Image (tube, rainbow, N blue to C red):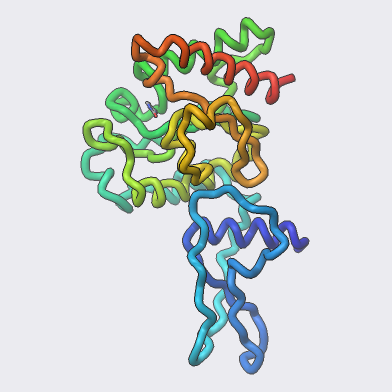
Length: 263
Ligand code: URA
């Protein structure tokens, strides 16, 4: 394994909540290897979940455990969906009708990330199929057409930070985002798109862990791991009548994004 592969392997398990790994060495020489220490030369990684510092092990050294055999590059959307199962990991399962995993081209160079399913999505099991979804489809397809880029909505992949509808369409809570974020991260790692578009503040927070407001962050390139992320307004926000200026800006953001991905 190369250093880069080891780094990405460790980051993958850190995102899944593992704090420590154990070197397979003779019992007499066993020492704990800390994930936070394992990649000291790594470039800063923009992910929402950074492993909490782990205090060095004291007392008896725990038995060595093998890391599960799954490497990030072998992960597939099918496997991630199976692992998600009939998810009951957080309270959002109580009010949901359907888990909305994601839809579109699984090999797309472009992934859109929204906040969470609304009523229509919960009903149909597909992301962005309600009013905001129709606007998103129009934005993608009209901008692409105008810019001479031959893509339709079905050519990109669309998913959300949380896969279950929050009650009354409230904003997902931090623990819900954290739990479901693991599946979002795996989706993104499995697809490995050329760019990600974060739609609105929730997607921005989940991917970039920033405190900056959306107005300042939109229209600029950021990074999740090594993948460029464009932030723009959520389509629901654009549906409000008084947001003409925001609409113009979102169209500009999309133009920049589509040219970067497809030129
Ligand atoms: N809003 C979202 O953030 N996601 C959807 O799937 C629909 C509306």
